[in-house]
Amino acid sequence: MRYAFYIGCTVPVKALKYEVSTRNLAKGLGIELVDIPEFGCCGYPVKSMDMFAALLMSARNLALAEEKGMDIIGICIGCMATLSEAKKYLEDDNLRNTINQKLRELGIREYTGKVNIKHLARFLYEDYGLSSIKEKIIKPLESLKFGVHYGCHYMKPGHAYDYFDNPSKPVTLDILTDITGAKTIDYQNKNQCCGLTIMGTAKDLSFRLASEKLVCLSGIDIDAMLLACPSCCIAYENNQRLVGEKTGKKFNLPVLYFTQVIGLAIGLDEKDLGFEFNRVRADRIIEKLGPY
Amino acid sequence: MQNGFFDFEKEGLKYCYYCGKCSSGCEVNRLESSFQPHRILYLLNIGMTDSVIGGDDIWKCTTCFTCSERCPQGVKVTEIIWFARTMAVKSGHLPELIMHQKETLLRTGRLHHISHIDNNKRGKVKLPQLTDASSLISEIFKMTKGDE
Ligand code: SF4
Ligand code: SF4
Image (tube, each protein chain N blue to C red):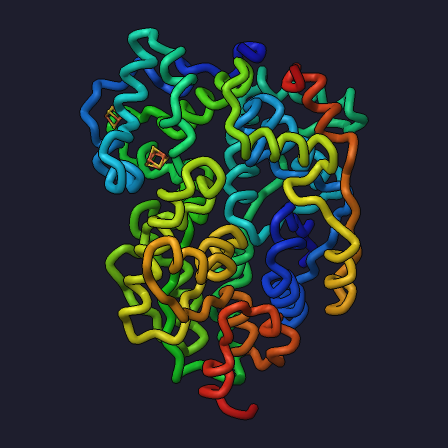
């Protein structure tokens, strides 16, 4: 199982615990993630500047993966939505031909439409298989309870993702977490957006969106919020204190990536899962699990 | 615009019948009632494009796609707002953050520049070293005239 690892711009700078835990989880599960240094930005930020340039940037990444004969696995939902949407746009022959002409000018052969793109969580759910994960679980997390945050781009736009999960009531990340033995809970504003994408253009709205979910989850008996995107994590964890200050609240809610949680369940050490980078200390969770 | 590959029509603008289902499911609308995606579509449909691309509303959208999923007419609301942003940027209405992001993207090929400090931190936990991808995006912007 060899896949082109699409790391994106945000993970390697702002989400080291996600990157470390992803690489070690993949190793532990026997999934080979190949680094492609030529990969560039997915195009998401450029969509607000020049949609055609953004599509060209997405297409370039798809063409590079195709050239290497590998499907793409990524861990940022923004990147995955952008690349998946580009794949759908490029099913149009006319548009693909025009883009390919431009790609040749950039020294890249062409994109023919062969590459599949999946978020690691979706890949685990659909391809690796829940039963195969279950076989590797040696430390069930029965004492832990999580509130899952999907993030809008995890399953939307639905058409770009072939509706692998329900766009308004997603379940796959909960099911993936349940496999570890941990419990997941439903909560009132589960589908609410983290607001990070408008941090720079509508700050107040952005903080209020993040704050509402933190308020809701802080009032429920859970050990941590669980998520699958570096941007959501910035909104809820890196900015947790700031969000509290701006909205007159005080939070102390640990935030974990699904890779850290599954990693614990297959017996990986917390050091190999980037726990040292957790801004809101998650020691209580490790203590609760007890010595291995 | 842009070889005609992206435009409001292709994303279904004219099929909007202003039922407001997009707005009633929008979280930004819930927090700020004057923000209404169906109003943006209405203004675009009656040709008031300038007031849309000159205003702040398009920059309040989180691009969450909830509206696009809810629309009974299959209008790609989020994409339309995105395209309005593209038009805004091209006509010089660009918020400070976008200007800053554009500058970083053109200079480094990434949304976040990789510094020595970043690479040191990465090295300590045995992650591969990374470099900026300088000229790529400026080349792409030149091709699509996005650098104008
Ligand atoms: S939901 Fe669709 S048809 Fe209804 S107002 Fe919004 S865009 Fe128009
Ligand atoms: S994509 Fe924008 S307009 Fe549509 S529901 Fe989300 S925030 Fe509202």
